[in-house]
Length: 325
Image 1 (cartoon, rainbow, N blue to C red):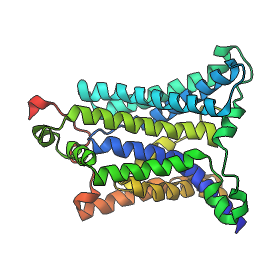
Image 2: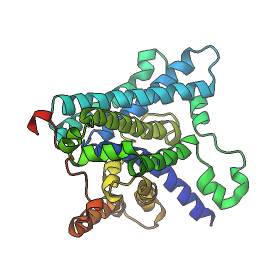
Image 3: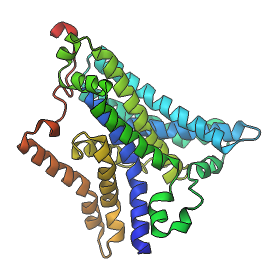
Image 4: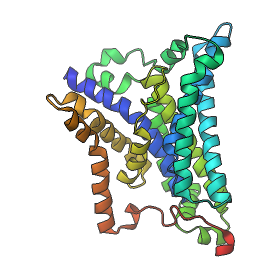
């Protein structure tokens, strides 16, 4: 039972970056913007949080953990939001190709993160860039978690970002399904010309949904760096989690609430090879393909059913210009 509880705990740890990333991308795609720059945005958010925490810990006379957390949290959101704003300006205002722009944002964000994440020590003139005080604050768990057996191990031995990710996903689902704002956003994603004719500001909704969605995705990078990697930066460590977040959007058919369970499934599949004995190197790589295989199967099934609720927004990836109406 202890082994199963530990596996489920690690599954949740793997799932959190995916949940943040997929929730942010769902909001973005509901506005009709296909942002393939999510992997780069997540990396940018993570490195911005790490750099700001490092600067604060190394320059403040008496650094305080909660203050460092607030600073790194704020900078992660701002950096991810800024990169998303650049994407919006290019695709919404200048009507650039969304696929090409998104891939360029991913390359830029990854390069930005790898450069500053690896060079922060040299830029500040210090050898030790440890930010353990900030990391310990991020990883602080509920004091009574260890007294609740397997339930505490699985669900309560996580930092506050675990609970925040679920709150954001549930709140996003509620807004999309039960509020006028969500209705307007879905209208913009389905038929921006009709939404525009009804008096809905298409540009405003696209900008807000994409920038807010990007900021949420940036928290996935922040969690990975601060909680999962304990404040260290490795140019190869983030891996394909950003792309898995985009695949998860399709798997949960654009539902943020379903993304909670979907992220847990993807997280478990991603680390399943570690817990299956006797696998060779090639077999382990095949296991890591499972989330993508499952996504392809979902794509096949949803395309055959033709149900509207299981389809992407009709104008997804198509730039809108009012004079084209």
